[in-house]
Amino acid sequence: MRKLVAFLFVLTFVCSASLGAEFIANGDFESGRVKGWFGNGYPDGWFGWGSNGWHHSDSGYRYDNYGATIWWDDTGLVQLVPAKAGDSFTLSGDMIHPSAEPLTNRNGIIKIEFWDGPGQSDNKLATTEVGVLTSGNPTNTWYHYSGSATAPTGTTEARIVLMVWDTGGGASGKAYFDNISLVQTNAVSSNPDFNGDLNVDSNDLKAMFSSWLDVSSEYDLDGDGFIDFGDFRLFAREWRTSIPNYSGYEFVWSDEFYGPDIDYNNWQHQIGDGSAYGLWRWGNNELEYYTANPTNSWIEDGSLVIQAEEESYEGFDYTSARLRSFAKQDFLYGRIEARIKVPDTNGIWPAFWMLPSDWEYGGWPASGEIDVMESVNTATTIYGTLHFGAEGGHDSSGDTYSSGGTDFSDDFHTYRVDWEPTVMRWYVDGNLYHTVTSSSWWSGGGGGLAPFNKRFHILLNVAVGGDWPGNPDGSSVFPQQMVVDWVRVYQKIP
Image (cartoon, rainbow, N blue to C red; front, side, top):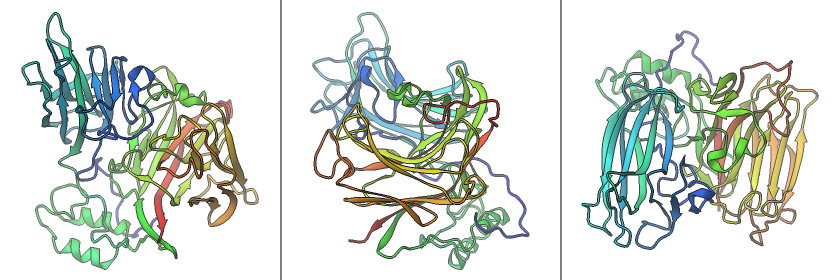
């Protein structure tokens, strides 16, 4: 963990997101494997209700290659965003309706809703419709909509909703949606590396003190509106921390989890039991319901905490969190590493892994999967695995790492994969334990270096139960935490 200055008091953080963070994943509908009828799955990054929609490529009705269309009022698309009272957001997006099937007694709607919980049984506190496309809008013309909203008292999440709504009898027609964006407008800076040199040092300290007691400043780390000892306490926690350089590599991205909240420039929560993503119980008969609740994932002392709880929730007996960098931080090749303290109990399954961002070679495992680190049950063995093969089939190459009975839940360890075009290597604390070359992997959807020659994104999650670890038993203890100190990506210098 990062160095602490002994005389500083413990600071309790108020949750807020990074300034200008883009909360929507795949708002342009360009990423992901799901294309076509909603009955086969919603666009990646989204979930929803109903099947009368299409992840389409209709010429003239999308900005780039893909968009989304909805043609019945029993269907909609949703993304969930953690929010709290006082958070202010700007939601924007574009809509169009076609002359061949114009809206009649039906409106296209882009809106933000604030709720006091994640379930349908919870309460909707407020709604702001930022865009309403009506039959009065000329067809074949894109309309851009934008509006602001502030979360009321009691808010725990926001829901971004795209839908059509019938306004009278004889309703017909469809609305197309594209370029959906949500940013927080009253967030605070959370990174004390003000000059971006990958070191928190005296240069950053001088920058902060240059605005000492200013009413407003980019150096306001605690979000109270001016620079004072609260900001200094946050700064001191990261004093003299730095991101190392590796010979032959350049640093390209990291999340150091400075806080005070999860950075939605980097991460998106996946919500539910997997059915919204076409993976009932996440394809592994898992027992948890993933949430964006602050009891399942949060920032604490410069680390991301993912906590699995034993609790009754949405018909499940366990909750946890699953975060991914999809459509926010996607990578092709590199040194991908994280410093993690894993949980340890029967039925627990923490993972640091990667999935394809575009699924260009087909469904799992034809487009590949890279498991950088997995642990199941007692944390004395670490697994690193590559999955590939034909869609609906399965081939893999994996190995394990253990170290003289070391319990990896006792402390932090660094887990890494070096991903190159023709070889992958797995490490724990710098110790190489598994190597796979391109002569061993293959894809039913492509030749050559497929499937590991396309973009992937990072996932961090803690599953409960499932086919591999088995279910918790009488010896299992909850809650269980996976604590992530940082995640970093480097790429080879050409």
